[in-house]
Image (cartoon, rainbow, N blue to C red):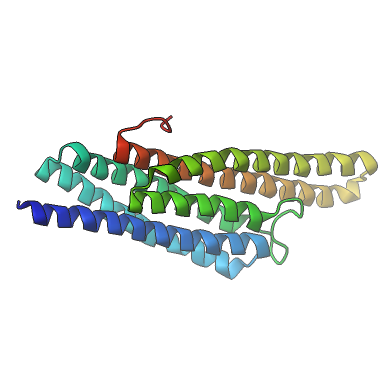
Length: 228
């Protein structure tokens, strides 16, 4: 195959990976709104839309496999294809987390008041967006920025989880529940569980952003500093 045609295939692959990332981030933003507001209709749209992401993932996975098998790329070209293969896997998993997040909001009330879903989710989503931009623009410095931001996100998620648990313990210490109040207590436990799951999944979104940044850094400079 002429080099120009092969380069066109590589450029198209990169563009389509970025487009998949845009689709996933759109689903993610919708999921956060569903979680924050308890909008069941919006949550269902996010969950049903996951099939579109899965189709995009399978198509790109097949394209990466064909390029490696048929073109046998070497050096930088091979790193681009293998990085793309890994990145679409992380994007697909972020989409799966979005479907989880969409389902956590309680009808008409959203997530536990001790968890600022939009704020935490905004930070995690920005990390994904920055990692994708680093991949598209081949920007190694942005990869390290994403990794640094993950430490701050982890700390914020840990603090949010502790607030939720501490609030539950404080309320239980201050109240005496009768048998008739057991349903209310069960509902409170359910709310706390949803909040903790939300925080956990937002932290995982940040982890996938770091994975994307790590693969990108290796693609650009064969630097494995962020790989783990």
